[in-house]
Length: 312
Image (cartoon, rainbow, N blue to C red):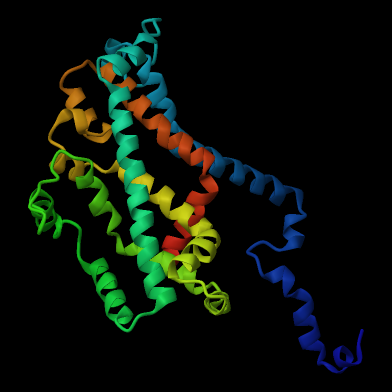
C-alpha cells in the first residue's frame, strides 16, 4: 500500500475495495453460489431460445411451407407434410412459371445501379462540403440537411412528375431503370454520414497533397476514396438493402411487368398461382438478402450503429 493510500480515510478505502463488486446487479459473491449460477444459466438459455424462435422461426416456417402441398397449408399452417408428400417441384414452378429468376435479375440491376449512383453522388457531395469547403458550402450543406425533415410521402408526387417529364431534357424516365437509380442517389442521410467520416480524416493529409501539387480529383482518388472505404462499404450495403425491399416507387415508375423487381412482382404472382408456389417464390426471393446479411453482417451492424449515432 502506498503512502497516499494509507493517508486516505478508511471508509473511502473500503468503498474503493467494494466498488467493483457493486457495479452489477449480482455481486461476485452471489454469482459464486451454485443456485444463482444455475438460475442465471437457465435464464440465458431461455432468452437465447426466444431469440432463436423470433429470428429463425419465420424463416424456417417459410422454408417448410415452400415445399409443402397447398392442401396441407390450408388445413393446418403448422402441420407440415401431414399428407406425407414433399413437393420440391414448387421451387421449379416458382422459378419458371413465376419468372422469379427474371425478377431477381431486375432487382439486382436496380440495387447495383442504385448503389453506384448513391456512392457517386453522396461521396462527391460530401467531398465538396467537407474537403473543398467552398464559400457556398454552408448553404449547400444546410439545403441537404433540410431535406431530412421532409417526409418521403410528401415528395412522392413532385418526384414522379419530375421523372415523367424531366426538366430541360423534356424526356420521360418512366419504365426505365433510371427512374429508380437517380432518385435513390439523392439521399441526404448518406451524404451526412460520409461527411462525418471525412471530417475524422486529418486535414494535414489534404494540405500535404495540395503542397505536392495534387488537384481536387487527385485528392479524391488517392486519399479520400482509399481512407473512406469502410464507410463507403456500409453505405453501399444499406443502399442495396433499401432498394431490394422497396415497393411503392418501383410500382409507380415501372408499370411494365418485364422491368419490375421481385418486390412488385410477388403480389401479382399471388393472384395467378396456388399458395404453395407463392410460398416457394417468397422463399427464393428471401434467400439473396439473407445470404448477403450472413456474409456482410459486420458491415450491416456497423452501418446500424453509425445510423443510430447520427439520428441520435
